[in-house]
Image (cartoon, rainbow, N blue to C red; front, side, top):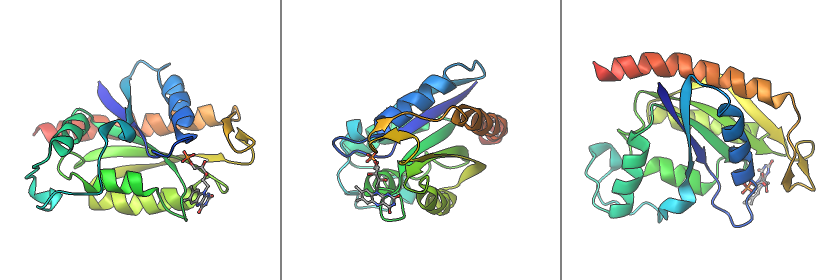
Length: 186
Ligand SMILES: Cc1cc2nc3c(=O)[nH]c(=O)nc-3n(C[C@H](O)[C@H](O)[C@H](O)COP(=O)(O)O)c2cc1C
C-alpha cells in the first residue's frame, strides 16, 4: 500500500494548520487503499538549513537532518498542508523541503492550502518548488477559505464539499503513487 505523509507546513504558535491537517487525516483515514501518518515539521526542530554540503549530494552531517530524512524516506507520497504567507508557503515548509533531496525524489504529492483566497498562491508556488525536488504534484487542490471554512479566522469549520475534493486528491495520489513506487523499485 502507498504510504502517505500528511505534512503540517506551519510551525507557528497558535497555528490553525494542525487542525486542518488533523481533519484531512480523519477524512483520509476512512479509506483502506493507503496508509496515512501525520508529520509535524515542528517536532523535528529543524534550524534554518545548516548543512555545509548541498542536500542533493546526500552527505547529511547533522542528527536533525538524518532524523528528518529517515521520516521522509518512509513515505511514497505526501499531502502538504500549507497556509499562504505573503503569497507563498511559510519559511518553515520551504526550509524543511530544502533540507533534504533524494528522499523526495520520484514521489507524488497533493496540496491542501488555506488563506484568504484559499491559499491558492501558496499552492501554485509550492508546485514550482516540488518540481525541483522531483515530486510529481496531482491536479486536485483542496482549498480552504479563512472567511468561510473558519470561525473568526481561527476555528476550523470546513464546508462539507471539501471531503469530496480530499477523496479526489487521494485517488490521484494513490494512482500515481502506486506507479512511482514500482518505478523506484526498478
Ligand atoms: C507572515 C504571514 C503572512 C501572511 N500572508 C498572507 C497572504 O499573503 N495571503 C493570505 O491569504 N493570508 C496570509 N496570511 C494569513 C494566514 O493565511 C493565516 O493567518 C493562517 O491562519 C496562517 O496559517 P497558520 O495559522 O496555520 O500558521 C499571512 C499570515 C502570516 C502569519
